[in-house]
Length: 374
Image (tube, rainbow, N blue to C red; front, side, top):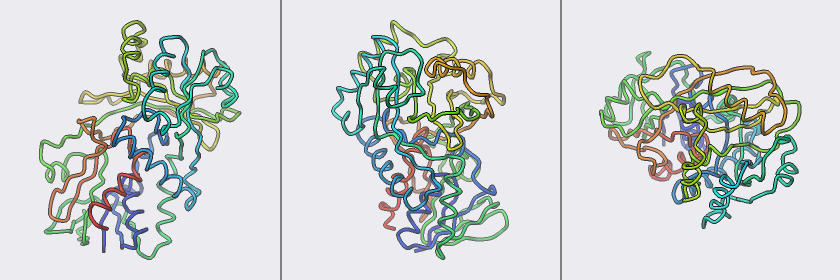
């Protein structure tokens, strides 16, 4: 079988990976020299802890296993089973963590409630003030800025894989074929469009105006090296408000009695933080849903994040090295992990994983391969 994959972000690259692993010929087409979108502009977290129960959690757990397996083959991914800690500061936040522990699927997530001293034993960099922490053993991380490059380097060792960068697909021709902006036609037994947040142009033409996917903008930042290990990923209690696994009467009470800080509420924020291979910290993020998106980045969210991080670390942050904005595609139906649609004979669109993209891509691609009979 010959598979044409359009898009070289993490979703497209994992589709190419599964196809090659199953012995198929793959041509992967990317309009940039390499992917430049949300696949690089994220935390690199394999985030199991907050996923909705049922299909979403099952997908995340399967993807977590696949990431670990692929990481053995491709060390350049930087896969590490670091787990995560969500420190809580008071009884109301603690009640939300305890409600999460009471879930039927808490053991599958690796949830454990730690005292402050136990949390510091797991992650000694957390010297600030907090009462306890929710630990999730199943959370992990990879290096987002280099993961696709490492996967590509491994794929290029296969004679069945061809990478065509700098080519934008403009047209679907007949069955199982696309034409790029160089005028070249690429024909296969299946075409998979993994175009990320590019939802206009050819995607709109193929999927129609009712595509149930929206674009979401975020702001993030990265610091100079911390100077010591941050042994787990770190979240704050605002992540309880964002992720569906934490919905409970305890969360309702937290919202009623302890609303978000004004800046966090205005920008729909949570803290997520993970240490990069060079020792720096990736910190975020905000969520903007209303179009048109702003074209600039705002300082108030960064100030808020720095304040929260410093309160957990008990020390000033290192110098901020870089700030950025990104845009990702998200299904408008929150119960769906991804939007997978046959848009022409032999042509499928796979998009809209939202903030689950880095976490779930290996399992999303595996499901596509299974459903298409690769």
